[in-house]
Length: 128
Image (cartoon, rainbow, N blue to C red):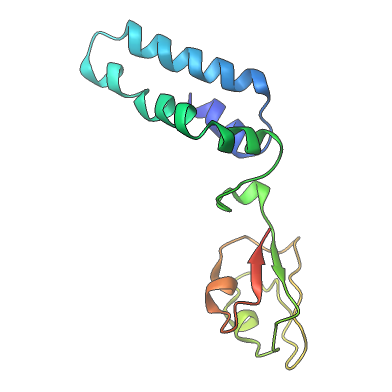
């Protein structure tokens, strides 16, 4: 189940993976002899039931929650005031130090740690 979830989370999942995940969770619940085995698949079954649209979004290469690093990118908007706080805080030097200019994030260097977005005083960094 974990391998299927990782595949879906990384944007490499297919519709068949959701069906296989649900069948695997139901089989595990039904075939287990102990309480742990009977309850371990419950989070998967619950999220498939109530949040299936989020799973389907991941199959389409989107993460509605903005948490799956393989499916998101950080963008600097025109609201950037060029204060360089984000560039100073970035641990991977993905933002060049250019005072008073609208900053840009080098997506090849960005490790998607979210530090830049949290540090920005004018909320000019967004997740897409």
